[in-house]
Length: 176
Image (cartoon, rainbow, N blue to C red; front, side, top):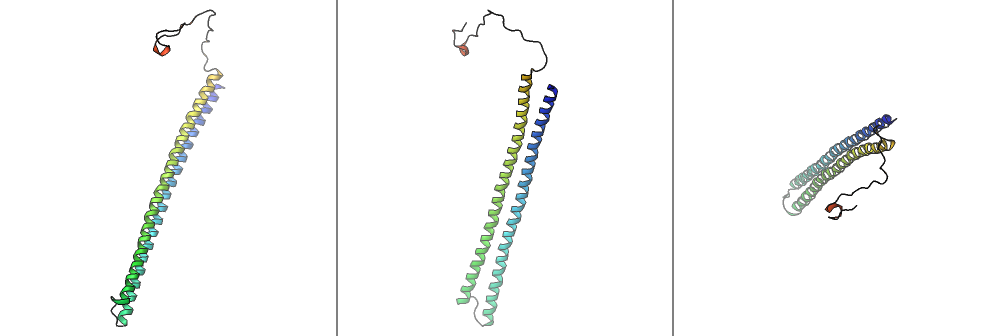
């Protein structure tokens, strides 16, 4: 019966350890997937910025073409001011997209760090659960009686015991 209890505790402890390892691997995979998603989102934001610059260039080209067709200097007066305004808005859109990409990368890294920390915690929980199971089994085994051995003899009635003396045991006085 005792052998079965010990074997059961060992199997349970091993299972807890492996469960901790599996949870850590799952969190590690989530962290990697999150990093991939964050990079994909960041690339999309950067593409939005490039598209904003392309729209800006098309708009400025259209302004120049219409001004030149109307025999107007495209770089002066209201036409020049219109181009400046279009360039400013396009550059602002580009910078916002660039900032969004950077923010998405940083939040992706932050979330990946959270997943990695959760994985480390799950692994440690598995190890501590396994150790606890082994410790509990050892205590129960001791309570059952432990391995067969020589029986202990009860103390002899009337025997005296002298306590140790020294600074750890009450100084130089000693007790009897």
